[in-house]
Length: 510
Picture (cartoon, rainbow, N blue to C red):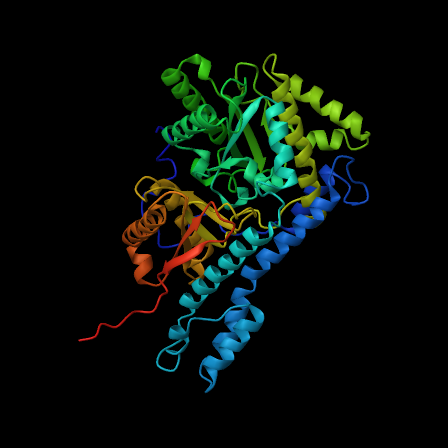
């Protein structure tokens, strides 16, 4: 691929070179807000969903608190490591404050050598992830499960717009991990999501997923019959920063917004051409390019015309529409949005595409209000602030901003560019503070397929070995730890842990 090596690091840096967690100064943040809107929350937009915003904020705060309390907790543990009843006290405090026990084989070494705080940090991150995974599948906190009212309604809407499947590729940057459930407000089960560095998805793999989708329509009439005149909608979401465009844009494209958008469009066009060259023009797909401001969560949509022609320097801005329609009634605002979407297309566009984009923009209004209300208009962590790297196939449960850096891959060699960017980012976030990089390896499988679980386990072990080899220096210094997980996608259960670099060494008997 022409852009596959954009994100590949050229050498192993000894100091953090990736954008680290950065907080916007008060004066700069205030200036941004004064230019955009009055911060009086009572002056809300007629199209926002206040109830959903409150629910989503509660979920975000609850999950991130599990991770953010780890370092303060470990600092307290460090102070008592030489006391006589240290192990018992540490376990008691961990159960009370974190909800799980610490690894006994690490605690029991504290009297011989300094407590391995790196191992404890990674352990706590992994356990916090397990808690989140279990809660997500057990309680459906985002109301996005396949049988939920929200998912069924959205799937029906998608069909009405003329699309039988929605396939979205956001950048693997953690600041876009919430792009489905929060930014676009789409039920997670109603969309196919695969994240890649720079949003540079693998064309061949995407064509294969298109083939499987169309084959299922012919064989099972799912999600609709093959004779129904609907299309496969492929979306790329690139990102940019309105506050610090030169430094906090997409790392895979050197914070060059124009390059990020152009590269995303190039992949979209390559996908469509691949399908048409292989299956004739009647098998065309529809394309959509979306830009996301990681500071405000406002989107801009490059509306395509009826032939999926997209112009890079022409888009409709959700933030501008938010301000322009704030004083209108609900019906007036919806009509205004549709008219503006139609006007933004290079030429005549399909009514279904207009309805779909209009809904995304309307949904995004609630997220703009969300950031306005809970983060005073722009996020304080304008840069990277991810808690762990997610590697492999899966992670349907991750829908929070700056929680996870994704690297969707089958092999480390194939996904090296994505993974290298993630490691580079975490050298700035964690290694610079002498903390390890937590990597969760994950492979989902279908329990209905004989041997699938064993193959998923084998994939975990293979990728874990490749990661240990590729980042040997970090692993040997205790600065990279892995958690191996698998999940049966046909079951309502969280990820199953099948191994970890933190497992106790088993002494061989002679």
